[in-house]
Image (cartoon, rainbow, N blue to C red; front, side, top):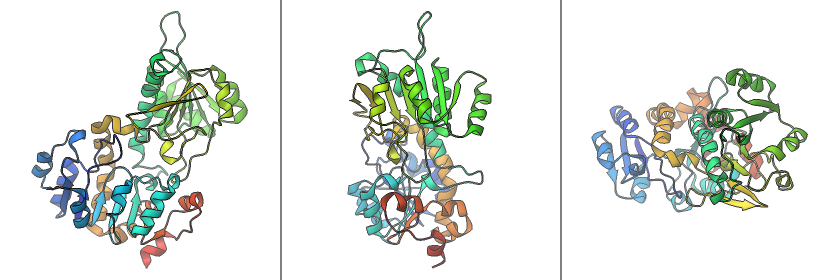
Length: 372
């Protein structure tokens, strides 16, 4: 199979869909790997390293898309890329369709077979291709939030860990999954007073044991949240519903409960965000203010640490990329129900129910399309 990896075109997206190691593994299995020139440069992988791995460097995206049977990338195709996709081609990437009706319509029109990293599952019920980037984004959230808290950036001027005689920042984390746990680990390490809210008592119990009393756990309901907000300096949104739009956990009216200069970090912005006042920002212009509250809503947070994030992502995606290339998407998805859960689109039809519900589009069962 001809596997193509284009250069990412989303603003300030510095990751790349394939490392040289992944390219080497594919070439060793008899596949032809095409890398757009300079695709990996920002993540520290020069064209020469890909060539040493056996890949072929392609001068531009159009030529790469025309030649490749499968496109492997990080972020969803941008508007200038969508017209290059075609029926019969496989797209393997993060898609987050529920939050982007225009993207969904364009991909349906193209007829491409699209497998979304974020809906592939595993035996434990986890999301193995989303987890490494959730871990990265979670660890970044307190770090970027602490920057936004600085007075020069519009924040309240509170230091995360405080100093002797001065209290540290109070941080609330909405959601105790992969993102929330990673965020808690860093926020606790920075010396903040951390409260994690979740609706799963078993998850709260796990976090209580894991952190051995170094943070507070709280069941998540609106009354409890309203009581907590006036004391918070930072709120991190870390809630995810696989493949679906994120519920709005904080309304605009609730912003008035926060102190001026408090910071919201919305890690769920790729899926629409969990704050009513959230809208996607970029690394170049990451924050904005609403009613005196600073919002950090960068849609590709892991892109800021492109090398670490790229290697972590490829560790998870490479085995499935090789399965798709070696077996073809139909056989690979037929044999692996977890990979089949990643199938979101095929031949102009939507195959992921949560996306259909979010966008009001009829869906087909993935298994039926594979059999056909």
